[in-house]
Length: 440
Image (cartoon, rainbow, N blue to C red; front, side, top):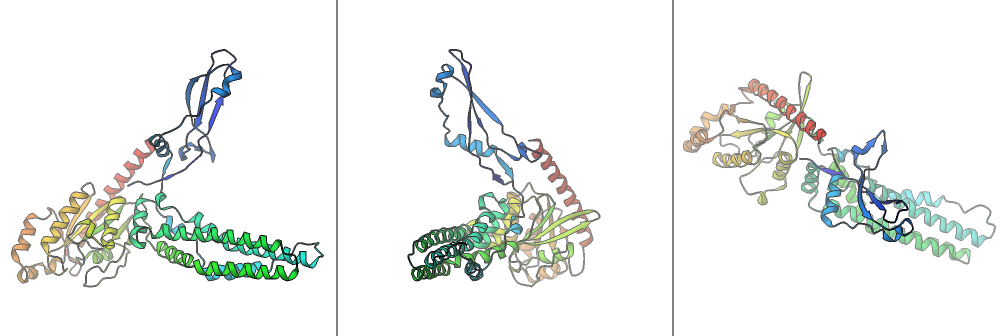
């Protein structure tokens, strides 16, 4: 459930001088990676680990100094000691990305206004000076935004596991890293081409030659940016998609509605919370994670409506179903599992029960409520469908399931009471986990 962000620092060795005795003992120290627990009042303090070694006299001590080498496991242990908990919400901090055509237009406009250096009277020298400066300015105006994107779009491995899953399931596996790598590649090409043509322009012997090389350099940078600018436009779409993702606060109790497609989860979300999902009578209406909020007195809680789960193996699931599993796997949620025994949802009662048993076993540590929806239609469904199947589910299904109907409002008040008690219990769990983490 936790994810981590690693601060990497160069390991530093320091030799504490020995005494002048013939057989002095020197202490070789290196600083460990610094974690946030080492910061006090904004100033970092290093923690030193020391190792004793024998050396010669003070004059020969430099020759006896041998840095300790670390194997892969030791480096991994050091890295783990520097990990800090990463919170969700990184997508809302993403920078605004300008379309490639706007970056290019702005850069050309600013570069064109760059004057030559003052005090140059020779026409040829002034022309080549201005040309070189304008090419350098164009290069920098194109590079600076790209550098900012590379610095402000987080690396996926540093994100919360839930947000890492969202990136993969929303964009496709490896797409996020591929687009960022393309943007960084474009930045490097702009830097190389810009410096190359600025240098050529600075070597011009005549005004005409300087103007030609300036024109050629601008043309080359334009062509390069237009050829590879698609990566920036892809980044625009990625930023827009990720910023639209719902923000989930792991420190706040969350109720996750789970079940087969079209069993009535979205209807219950509308009843229980501020969420307003689309409600239609066909499967997979919910095409993403929809967030709502519940307020009980002074308590504020979260509700997630998740895409429906079908009865199949994980490797056969679509990305919508994997979103549901990501929420259950990576967020501290309580579960409201919705069952539809009417036969109207498109998933047989037997298959619903198989899925329920699988999810219940996999996430047995989650707090749980079972709800049978559309109970006003249940008697009619028993007449029109296989009675044995429905009765079998009643005998083998979850004990204590609450019968509810959004249409007749049967059981809704009791459901709200149970949800309130469940979320209060979930809050207690979260606080206990936070206390344990602080104690560690």
